[in-house]
Image (cartoon, rainbow, N blue to C red):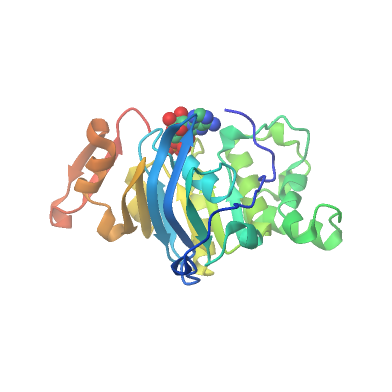
Amino acid sequence: MTAAPFVPAVADRKGAAVPDRLHEPQLALHVEDLTVSYDSKPVLWDIDIDIPPGVMAAVVGPNGAGKSTFIKSVLGLVRPTAGHVRIFGRPYGMQRRRVGYVPQRSSVDWDFPTTALDVVGMGLYGRLGWLRRPGRRERDEARHALEQVGMQDFAHRQISQLSGGQQQRVFLARALVQQADLYFLDEPMAGVDATTERAIVDILHRLRAQGKTLVVVHHDLQTVRSYFDWMVILNIRAIAQGPVSQVYTAENLRKAYGGQIALIEHESFGGSGATAQTLGGG
Ligand SMILES: Nc1ncnc2c1ncn2[C@@H]1O[C@H](COP(=O)(O)OP(=O)(O)OP(=O)(O)O)[C@@H](O)[C@H]1O
């Protein structure tokens, strides 16, 4: 996978005329008829997804289901073949300052020579503009964000020298200083230890308690019910979406994962709930 820049590249989507019903400010995210192809091969097909504000939504699905592509196309990093995206009722290009993005750790060039504090400071560029250098106030804000993720002692450390979990925390701090209303996180818990995972989940829950909306690509089906309150199941198509209590069912998971998961149904869920575990990762 090619390395992404530290600050997400953005592009306005110049689409066709947009129907009025797309402008629904009560939805944090509204995706309609979204189709995305790589080299003419569709990886997302005619997707409709609505996410209300204030939820923490898991985006789950098997390997290659199009989860990262979904986020990238919403953020204008991948150009869709068709479809419309609205963030709080408006195109992304008009709302980008309200949106934070934590890309997949593996998609970033961590050898880039910069410190943890500088990476966090990059989260402020949306507010400052690229030409104004961060001043004392901004540096204090960046330091405070590092404190929030328990990384204050690593402010001047080169990012190449941080562990995977520490790098993930730095990226989270970068998203925090953005003070966005809607956050997209691509597998923030991948490859981190249990302590870091707990710390990340606590931060995400705190953001949700502040009314922020979080859309999180997540691999571990076993923790979906304890971490998340909303859920989108993808596998090229949108298989199911809604409150976790309604959507996390054996039937929906089987539709997406087929034989790739072991489902252990529990009587305590009246047969409608299941503990699911992916087989062989993903
Ligand atoms: N830049 C690209 N060019 C061509 N094909 C791509 C590109 N990026 C992703 N793909 C393919 O598109 C499909 C969807 O990929 P994507 O990364 O969105 O899935 P995912 O659900 O996030 O997968 P994973 O869980 O493995 O990270 C896969 O088959 C992948 O190989």
